Image (tube, rainbow, N blue to C red; front, top):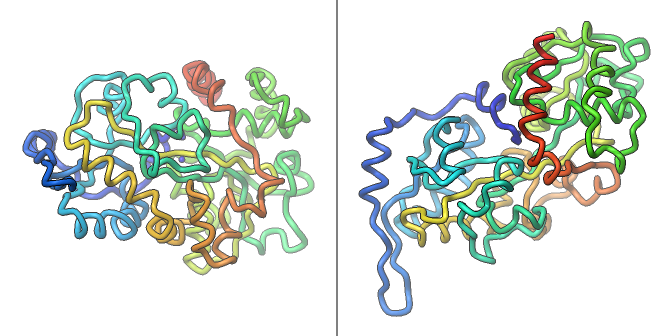
Length: 357
């Protein structure tokens, strides 16, 4: 979703954008917790930066409302901006207490980031990002289609996705440079590379494979466009985050999601090591890792949990719709986050050039 998040950010409706001055004033005025006996008294505010829309609304219901009621800490949501959060990752001051970042962005900057309490660390997160992620979740990158498009069964693999003769129709494909997502991995799998041999990614080979169906790709700039492209019949298949297919299902559409070779992508939020109102940030991190609270968010969004105990709170039908459900364990794949973090700029530049070509 980082995930390079630029594409997701572009297409999601956001809550009202707070002015920078207001945010700065709020951050400066946030009360630091004080000690009273053995208990820490929380208060003030936490400025939370994400991509808005229904996902933020779900966080409000699942996490923020109850947290504020319990602690008195005001969680103020705002729309994340590239210039702010990327500079904050490197240690520069900024307006956010907590902000979203992909694993590829987090790993080079862990020296600047807060280590969250042990009870806030999701056991389903990769160990290299687990100590830093707040409010983690897992999104899926895969292909999906309206079931009626292929009544006798649709693509079973990424190789099938590239088979225009067997599965005719246009394909919706990410067209924003920052959201190359799993594009290169998908192309290489379709070209016969085994999952265990994906890394280091052979970018030229991947681009050559993508060129074979370039004329059949419909490039979208924002994920919500996927829903319109599928329901209008403009495309027969879409590559997207699984949340878009969940949204179609919630709207009454019969959608098939292909879990075979789907990518499970952990994501989450981070805070700077010197964050103001640290006690409130720590408390919110623990609150968001609580299985019951996280189950509410999971049910509303279709994003996978990062705490394995959440699956004990879910109905089997809900669990089966999640990319990191135990029943999908033999089918799904994971990115090599270390390699991707070390080669992020090359990936971005290569995909930008391929799109332009």
